[in-house]
Image (cartoon, rainbow, N blue to C red; front, side, top):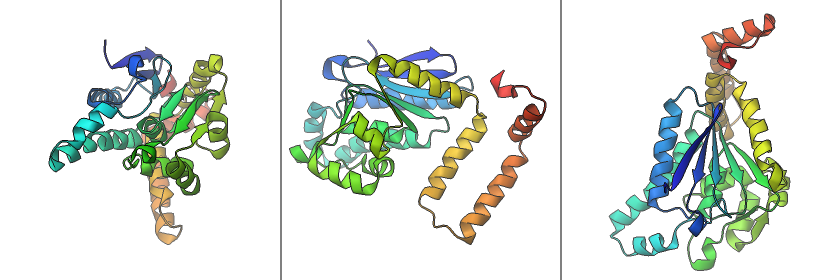
Length: 259
């Protein structure tokens, strides 16, 4: 049984964490498989959207504690290499040119919450819960912290990282960490609705929009940023995708990327 399963649903590739017996704990095999599948999806033009989901009763309970205990006994260099694997996966997710949707049910704890934060959009069942419990067992959520802070905001990250409290999906929705919160029976339908909306957009436009958001998030507003955005707009408008999109709108037809 593969630890990560790939399912194709139209324009979307669904990647299922598939270790339900351990609540989809994130061991090295899962991280490597996710990274490899994402790399394949990035190159597959038929994949417009990627959905990350979990089998069983949990999205992901976080890191595999047995693996962490073994890592603590390794040499410093080997330990850093092990940690770097997860850091590389999160970075690949965050920089993926295609939109990533987290489909969350049950617990999304520790590293599992980090996976969610590295996605672009989060759709959660009302019963889903998020938690950063690392400090309660003497650990620190180091690698996921940049993604959590960006997605949840620094003040709320400070609270949940330091207290280890559980964050309900409705409250996470109120705080902006979750984009859609629905009854569990409606979870897939809510994801599919967003997939449909994303699939209508130009693939290159989506990739550029993601890069733009990453750039402006930490950039001060001023003449330099204004010049950069103006240059980007000029480049986008002159590109074939924008020309096709504008032409299709004026001609009242669907653009080429929508078949």
